[in-house]
Image 1 (cartoon, rainbow, N blue to C red):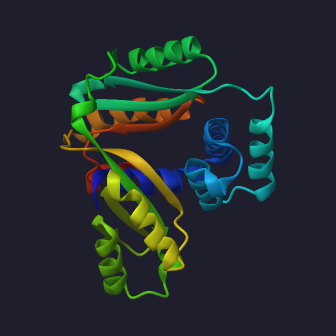
Image 2: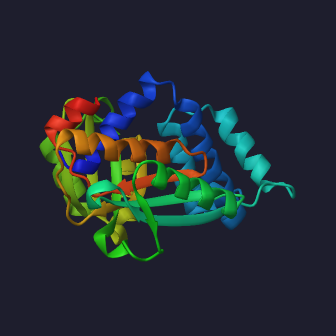
Amino acid sequence: MSGHSKWSTIKRKKGAADAKRGKIFTKIIKEIMISVREGGSDPNGNARLRLAIQNAKGANMPKDNIDRAIKKASGAEAEAYHEMTYEGYAANGIAVFVEGLTDNTNRTLASIRYIFNKYNGALGPNGSLTFLFDRKGVFTINAEDAAGHELENLELELIDAGAEDIIADQEMITVTCAKDDFGSVNRKIEALGIEAEEAKLKRVPKETKTLDIDSARKVMKLIEALEDDDDVQAVYHNLEITDELAEALD
């Protein structure tokens, strides 16, 4: 299993264990609200909102929460969120790319810089790390939801739609595709009667770096602190999540 897939699986387990669902919902609600502000409240004509709602359902967000977020974003007094990115290095040269949605850019920048400094990292200029990551479509499917399909046939269908990599275990199926094929793979998954637990464009590292367990744990403290910030939507890094590290973090 690739590093970003392993970390996604670990986060999924830790999220349930640590009762972090409220934070997950907050991040999804922000995405719904900025989607509405940009493209309107009708998901049929707003692809970004449609995807945000899909991810909300995958996270088991109640329909009432989704409807309230859409209604609130449609109002004149809705918060104006701005999309922000931050780039820097953790200890031992691990690249860290942060995506955020904020209503106060000064507050968020100060918070992100504080976290980097606290965990022996350094915030850098925007654009300094972009070349280290590829934008990829990443779909996470609960294996039970795909139980009606033979895995081999499912893989062939998804590859035909543009999937580049398919990783399956007993719990999850992770599908990765090029950014340009995101829509076609998403439509294929829907056509197969499967509801993805998560469907997003993510930043996947072109190459990863392996650290010893103690050093890697220190890096992951920075990653987790960033992910816990209310203004952060996603954190990407190029630390290799080895089987040994995955077991230590699980």
